[in-house]
Length: 468
Ligand code: AMP
Ligand code: ZN
Image 1 (cartoon, rainbow, N blue to C red):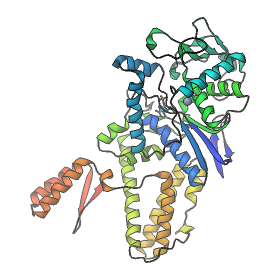
Image 2 (cartoon, rainbow, N blue to C red):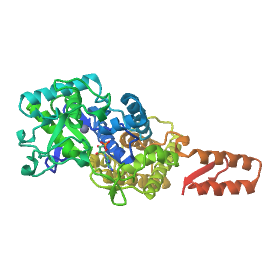
Image 3 (cartoon, rainbow, N blue to C red):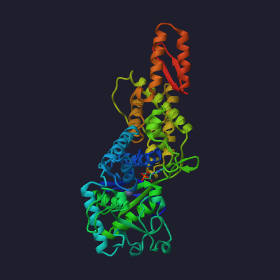
Image 4 (cartoon, protein in one colour):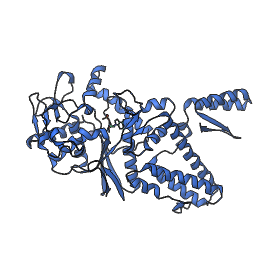
């Protein structure tokens, strides 16, 4: 039974899935490489999806791509390339980063500029105008009339009187917005260049909020089960989405709102504008790998701020090493076991295996879930040391691990993925030195490898690497 924290009600609620769970997750604005702060949100959503699926549910997940807004237009103009060509680059980079972080693909990635989406946005705005929830102003842009929707502010819990100001904000960079009527359709201006679509209100482009409302309802229906994003998306973006959708359909737009807290650096939100960000590719280039970054982003409860540090990455490397070693030991043990039976194991020593999943049922309590995993690791080492586990039991533990890892997705695929290229090169040079009994060179290379953060343990046939 799931219990998730609903941002709308500010409390944990029981979540009962239907036949298919319709999940909408606000995606990136593809104007630059996403930073790992953005990816904290996507990793949290991935954890949610994987856990729902591990519990036997079918999830239909949509993640939008914002490929038209002030920032994308500005970028394309600065580089003097068509908007589509400009955003295509960052779309490709985004998907590469998703693969590196092992994010399960969404069922669809609608882009705001897809003709069917622009059409859906125009239809929605038309309905809002007809129902008196929107109006065209003197500047030809169309605005949502906040005063026509008394529930506006319910998600962010903002003061109702303060919202009913008549200030109109055209800028859709949400951190700068005020509580005010917001643009649904922005009339063309010179800065937009050739980026414009025809509409009943003249040439222009959609506002950011209507993009998500139109794409979410077009692909998932009037009521969706779960809507996620980073906490900074809650207001005004998600508030506006509710207003737009509920004024059009008259139905509840979202059953459960889930937001993740920020990734921080030295007490500040990681953000492009603050300049305190890392991209996935930067970290990969400096020798970290995707599963380490994933583990860091995953391992703190999604509603707790997470402070990003290099020590955090190092700790992740160590935790993963413990998992790898444990899994290797179990696998080595089963090589001498002839049976392929998979008995269900309830406990590993004093630890109840199901507790891993029960922890995640409780608002994705990853800290408790990881505590179960490391208790199992400790217990199984102890039991193996005492020769107190049978081959069948070890197989059952590996089967359990596969279920766990269908959620965590941190298994080591190959050694090449784990060990940075320079270290691999040093290792093969050292192998050559050892083969020709050049011990001085071998020792020098050992130190060089150590400088990269890896210790070597020599066995008869191989050089085993251990992270420092
Ligand atoms: P943006 O491209 O700025 O619209 O952000 C895309 C997603 O990343 C949104 O869900 C944001 O809330 C989220 N996000 C941006 N910065 C951070 C951060 N430092 N920590 C966590 N989530 C973030
Ligand atoms: Zn959105």
